[in-house]
Length: 429
Image 1: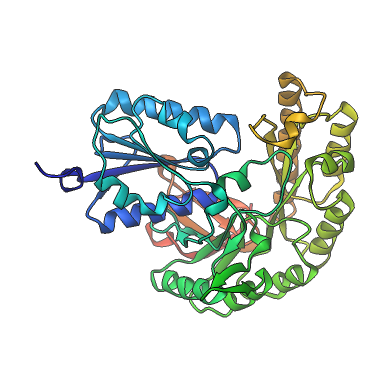
Image 2: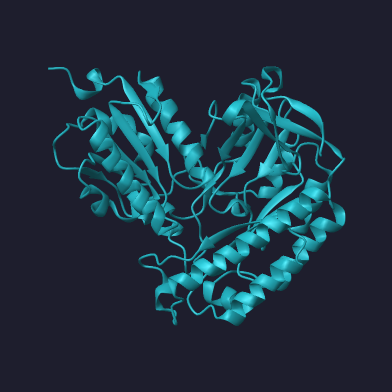
């Protein structure tokens, strides 16, 4: 009887969570396609379904379980593989979900082809995982063909101990690719027609840690940025997210005069209250954050600045939240990504009291999302009647196409094939 791998013809993927996960899913897809798999849409019937999970919020866990149930109804004979952060943190919990065949932890996800060879449908779920302390290798990943903008993973893991976060437990210690390897990858992406690269990582500003030939490697994100700026063929780079304490003045000043790095920063804040920042174990105070924003705006008034913020962290009083709201209201930033705090197992935040009631968390989320909408509108209005370059992506809904200016203002227009993946001068209206 032929092995499962010899029979298998198709695979479908679904990604939950961050840009880093999208880059890794794309790489897993290429690995399996090289082994003869045909990629299918997740809504189609496939021989194997791979779900790359997140575990930043409780919703991501619930969504994973919901997706498995959907596969069970549509294709009960198909193999279901779960990988990603949720798989590393709670492998046994996932293995107990009816329909799951294989659980791949952080060290094993890129060996997916080998694991599939030894898989038989109907056996109890196989768990391939290890202690996160043993995960110390870096696997380069990037998304391509999925979208105009390519997410390129250059760093993984985190050495920080924020009290609300499970990512260090899910992804391990901070480690990176080398500058030389990233440059080579970028040259290949440029040769494939990629115009924009989003540099991604768990803690991107911590880029540079790693081992090469048994020796410790020490490079920096600033060195990486300078090297990438010289690569011909790439029109745009974006920095996906960078901690305020790692966003050095020299990086800001470099982006201001760069040929290819866009005037766009995404800087996590999490709280505008120094008291709450301390309980979160963040490595800065709000004064530093305000200084970074002021420097960016003084030399790049047109720069877009995005902010991550968490509402409802344990012990966040009405006064603490007002501090955050007022701080953000007065800050010259362009948009907010608002997260409602959710309890995560084995995090220090579970010991912080009092707990904020869920309806209060939801109300605070709504207030900040409304503020974000106003911030985005104000930022967009500041650029009306300006002509800026827009990189247009592929066909969207209802015959429209979308693109972004250099400073991340979204533009929608009727689809024109000749504009796809092209930089077009666009007057903002």
